[in-house]
Image (tube, rainbow, N blue to C red):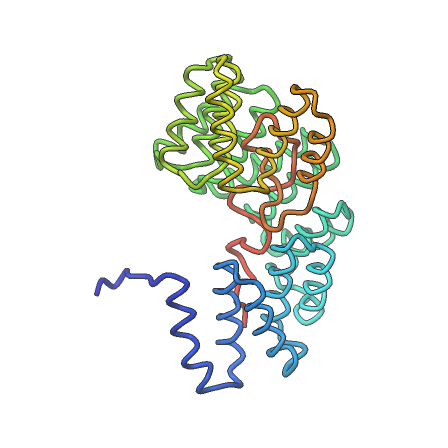
Length: 330
């Protein structure tokens, strides 16, 4: 077997069950199982395991942090904050838990509190790219785009090899109208990883911003072909087909998008717009209300959609999944 072989999460869960049964008090294994179950979207099973851990050890840091991740994935950010605060009380200087608290509080628009926790992360590591990106998010919430752009530039300087940070910087440059610099950044990402989904989506958006609609269509088609399970590529193709005067193709793509992901924000918003055009105000209102509902770890997809409302999400840094930090912490 190759030394680089990595079994899928489902295998890890199955393997972990044996040791957990043999050593029922080994809480670290149980928390690891909960992590893997969460990654498989088996949230009820993960919560059941964590309840057992916390019943035995109410102050288990890893279990509290993982409980926060699950609540975050369910869209329960207030519940996530409560779990994270309990974990932070045990390890006040832990960068991961402070980061997660900052993120959850920012999503709730409790920006001053979010900054307090984020400051702890940056005091420990002033060059933390993840924390600098989160700073950008807080500034965007406040409407300070200049400060947000400064944070993203600092993040890109701190982590020049991080392709996702480059894409985030390019996205903000695009939204501020600095198209040429954004193009350079996106192409630099695609030079390294030609299949990078977020970069392909940004490239399509940049072509759209330059009114290069054929290039935009081709880019979104390439993204959809390379990433067939990414609904946002289909949504962008809906826009392009409508703009190209192909409403039937647009409708077919929209139905595919909704069949693939019924609660996708962008697809729901497009459906709402379409209902308005068809003078079906009741349906349009219902769809718009659905689009505003909490949606777990998919908080924010507006970076990929020119039609969707702006939101706080970061492509590679969704709630509870940031690489620094609390995942399966012992």
